[in-house]
Image (cartoon, rainbow, N blue to C red; front, side, top):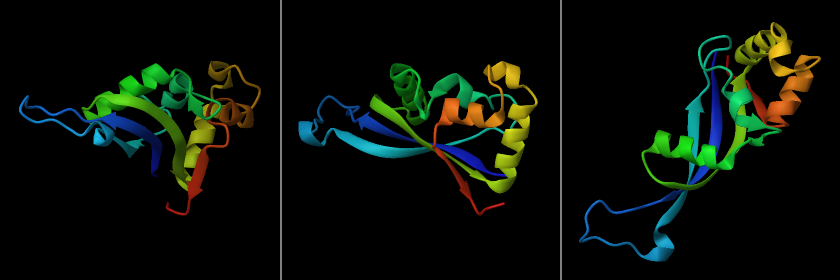
Length: 127
């Protein structure tokens, strides 16, 4: 069972030594960040509910803070790209959502997926 959240982040590079400086136009880089998704039902699995809304970061400033923590570098901007899941994870993910629809204030699993992830779920052939 495998799943990962995919983000992009604009990272601001800052030299550690005062004798080093960067060309201003080259001081930023866009990187793709892969964050392992916790197993459904385990601690942290509700990351999507607490962080995303309609396939976007619900709070972009908080998204930058998270990305900066993950990368150990200052982040200028961050955006969510997709949740990549294999078939097994996706089935377990939907089952865990169905077990507690009240926590999502939703009528069904499809509504939850749309509400928090929009169309940003990609199911892979891995299993």
